[in-house]
Length: 373
Ligand code: BGC
Image (cartoon, rainbow, N blue to C red):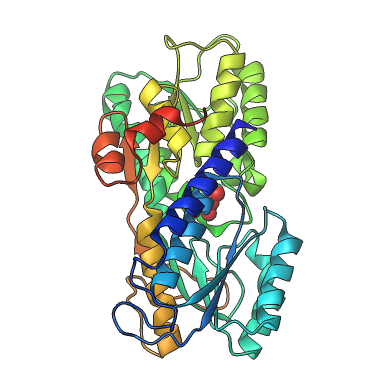
């Protein structure tokens, strides 16, 4: 419930700041952007997955702002994690004959037919953050290095717990995994990045997963549900950690970290035995938790940068030019390899959050302090 309120607050803040900027970014009502490129009043339809998590609210607002500054008309829709709703949103955009579609899918397999309709109608599609699977209707993909996100989390655990020293001393740490949604390609990529770093320590017993749940299938959580992460953690703590503390909660999402925090508090954990908890997105609530010590780290993904990269892809496909990409190998969607621009993820913790998040203007100290209030 609290999270919803934070989200609503962020949304209101975004709307206010966007209204306050008006056209100051350089876009003009005649469809000509600041740099002079004609956008001819073209319309871009944006489909975002949910407003229940802060990152997608920021993504939607950033995309709308950047595209409007370039002179495009923008229609932004959220599907609230409802696959049928997202299908009908895409179909509606096709019916309205928007000029380009940007889609961050809830479950991309369900969108295949709607995407084919877009292709038949000559509407190019850009995949945003999440790869659109099993379709040839997608032109480009703008995302973060999703395996890289997993590596950042794995390496953080490796370094903070000094797993090499633990291995040499024949010591061990307990660890449990809370991975992302099985219908989101990013989730498996992230898991693979984590295991690239941590598998050897699980294999030799430096890391001990008492539940035995280390595979992606055993640890994935449908639709990135915070509640499910909390339930899973409560069950694991009861069944496997009655006599020993959990040392590391390796989670793939800030929302999971909130659920794990609640489960740990319910199980009586305090600052004295609080585990290392990872997350993803560096949400403002997560940042507050990092400052007060109830979450250890998160992975910062600058949604402003992603919006910029995606908006230049939109511009290129509409102008018939080639956008900048930096990967043409990794993202095979089952039908084609989608040319991709990958942005870099960065680890954020108590020691660097000021430099990474505050100095870059992503959050103010005040926003962090007031998160969740
Ligand atoms: C995104 C993450 C996000 C997750 C849950 C993933 O597709 O890449 O940044 O935490 O969805 O919303």
